[in-house]
Amino acid sequence: MVAETRGCDDHGHVLVDFVTKSSPSPFLLKTYMLVDDPATDHVVSWNSDGMGFVVWQPAEFARDLLPTLFKHSNFSSFVRQLNTYGFRKIATSRWEFCNERFQKDHKEQLCLIRRRKSWANKPQPLAQTLKESDEDQRSSSTNSLSSGYNILVDENHKLKKENKVLGSELLSIKRKCKELIDLVGMYASSSKKEEDDERPKLFGVRLEVHGDKERKRKRIEEVSESARRVLLSVNVNK
Image (cartoon, rainbow, N blue to C red; front, side, top):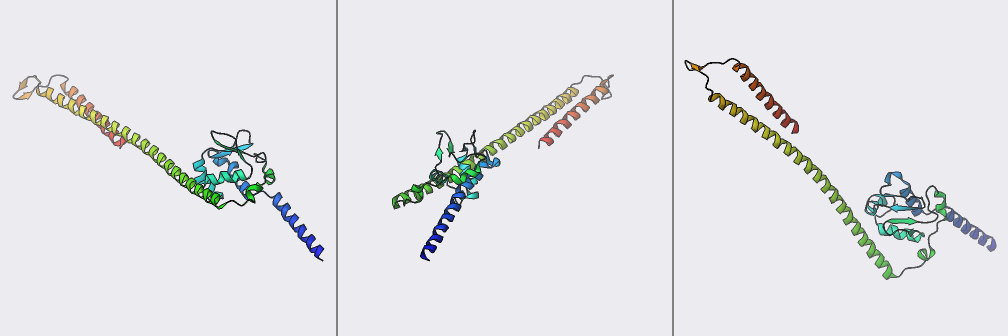
């Protein structure tokens, strides 16, 4: 009876071990989902040969993507977790990681990736635990500052663009006002010429010379049309 019970227990352990080994880690599944999503390729994507992945924007990755699947937004913790599953950082100029069984279009290989026993089973000293906790806090603070800085930079760019548009509109209005002032000056000069007109008078009334009326009418029409165009342009710019 005891032998039968022991056999059942052994069979149960074997079954649990089989299920565990045939199912990939939730961490690996979530990481694969983040990397394989084409909508976020500007933040994280597969590398050129699909044998690894690159985190192009660590700050955005930690701020926007990690919290969607993980319970934190700490990029350093994510990197340490990768290390426990045998991932290696293969580039110095960017955050590129690879594992021979973590490949594009080969999701079925995830169940072959094992967590390192030295990391999973070895109890860490209290000092090491406190050190890592302190590093996590500093990393989280750094990520928050980086996110805030990026937001400020974006706002600054928007304000510069708006300021440029306003400056262009102001210059246009100034130009139209100058045209209007020049037009008024031209009209005033024309009026002065009329005062200096030396045409003969009869009983105090200046005699009209042939063609004067037509010229005066055309001049008035030109001044009116110019003023109308200037005012119309100013209203459009507003």
